[in-house]
Length: 130
Image 1 (cartoon, rainbow, N blue to C red):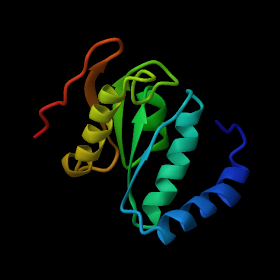
Image 2 (image 1 turned 90 degrees about the horizontal axis):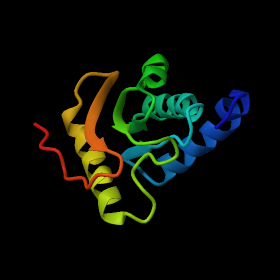
Image 3 (image 1 turned 135 degrees about the vertical axis):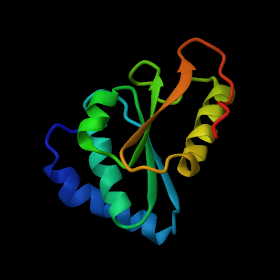
Image 4 (image 1 turned 180 degrees about the vertical axis):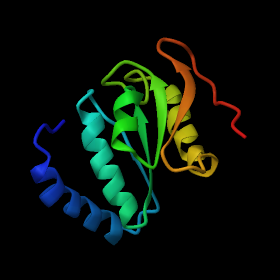
């Protein structure tokens, strides 16, 4: 998490974008670790989208994500520090990541925050998105 975003914006983000472009990346999933990270993720996400790479971020704090106006995000009701699920629960994490990838097709309006149906400490199953 970065409280002073100057170095992030002027140094780190351009390097991230150069790597993504050189690797011909089509999609990026961003995950914050803590509440302040939601703002940093938003800055990174918007910059990546500006060069034509589709992104989605996970949010546990949709009010912060809404404020930074990211192109698309998925709200998940997991505790901070666990954006795709509990440690060592690989099957559950795979479901979350798979569903995040599906949201690239489902979310049509910029700024959408899609609420995923998952809850902490509960076995998860893929949602039936339209």
